[in-house]
Image 1 (spheres, rainbow, N blue to C red):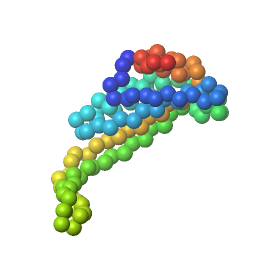
Image 2 (cartoon, one colour):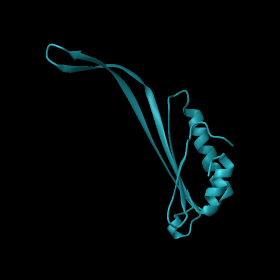
Image 3 (cartoon, one colour):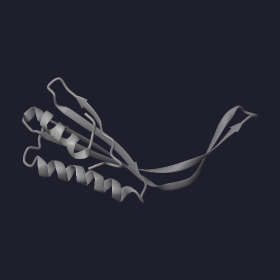
Image 4 (tube, rainbow, N blue to C red):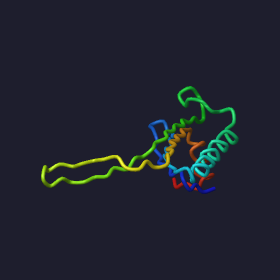
Length: 123
């Protein structure tokens, strides 16, 4: 199952536990697709590793952290003032809100291998 929005980076600790980190930003039109992708990943983990979620150092097989932020960008009209040698910045139009979601999944080697297989990630 391929992912279009979430591009995971992988890291591993000395005990062999792995961590997959992804961050994706979406404009309002793409937000439902991004949300669906995050839900697909979390549904898979909860289904295939049911009952084993928890901190790895306390015996869990996997855990996750999900964060989000909504930002509204305001363009700046930027101009160089030759006479005074300075920049002039004036607020312009405000754009549509953009949502950024960050998802981190951590797990045992078995969880990490299953995650790679399920979502077609390179080892």
